[in-house]
Image 1 (cartoon, rainbow over the protein chains, first blue to last red):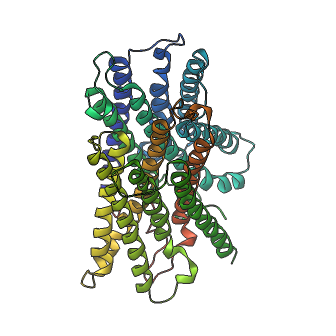
Image 2: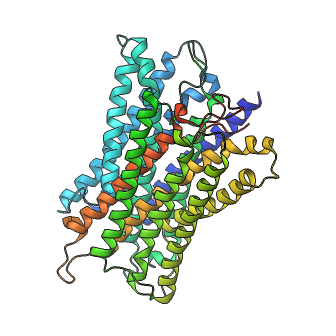
Image 3: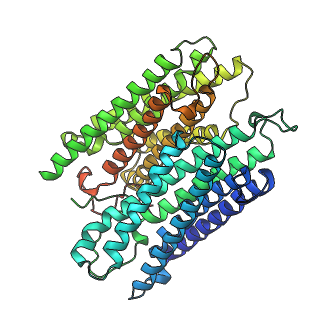
Length: 247
Length: 247
């Protein structure tokens, strides 16, 4: 009982931090960066952080913890599998739209793509996410996949799930940091430089800190064994989040 | 037996990636950034990435996995505890010297400290690392600490250990990305901008990718339950790396 109360308090924290991430990344780009458009201008770039944080971090993290919610521990797992896969598909689509926003902005303005370390880590994260979704769909949603294959794939699927979230956070923090150095140069239009910590810098730095906090709460939920969904044939100690490699 | 061979192959990969990180961060700053000094110039700043990557990531990661090495699974754990704590103390000292390098450089050049998101995440990581070392020393090395307290603290100690490594990697990637945008502006002294991917950009981007790979290998070693040191009173499924919260 105490475990369930602790779970729901942690889950509430996860939801609140997730909402704070989405609200703050939208507020930052709407209020300080000039808002949104899809016209090849910097307003198109502004969709990039919003879609990446919302898709790759917040929706992704929420989809990852869905099986930990005791309310979902009924006998039929299929609806929750569909929810898990569906939210991750939405997360993936938002991430791709977020990437399109920046590629299209760069191409329109004749700027190079994929040169920064942020972009290298980010594109690897998206590639791993794609492979993870396809593998997950093939192993756990196609009815023809044997149960033995599912049991073999599951530890790797769970471990990779956590790692992709970590890589998503690395991408977001390096990206927000880079954007603030680009945007807050000072001396233009009377804006203060990043080093003077104007309100925008505090807002976006706080966004970064909240993204990290959200990620840590999700990783904590994923890795706490007593919060794992009890399953038929489930053996304690076999399925380790960020763990056991199936060898 | 197969588990031990797989462990040593993974551990060899961990060692090689760690050596590559140290060699590459030193090479980058020596060959492309003008080398090292402690005179308030940019050459003093160059110690910052070298000490942080070596201390906060490579030594830290190697200290974290020391109990997983089957060779250390003798009856007396104390020498390995001293090695674990000693390497982490060295890692901590290097990290502090790395921070001194940048603070002193900033102060000499009248530049603000602790304004970027990189610095916020980095300083939080160092604070958590300090707390973790003091807690670890108090709980596991002071002879007067009761065994019950050690058992209670251990899961949190192991989980925090992994999280601090993740935060260290977030700090390194955002820092390397930031440094490359600062350093590779192009048009000065005939250097190419970051966006043209000159050899320095590829070197430092590769360093970032290798740091991430090193971190993932360490997390994999830490989280694989079959590689955990067998201990008296050890119950399978109780101590979860990045896991169980002791509640």
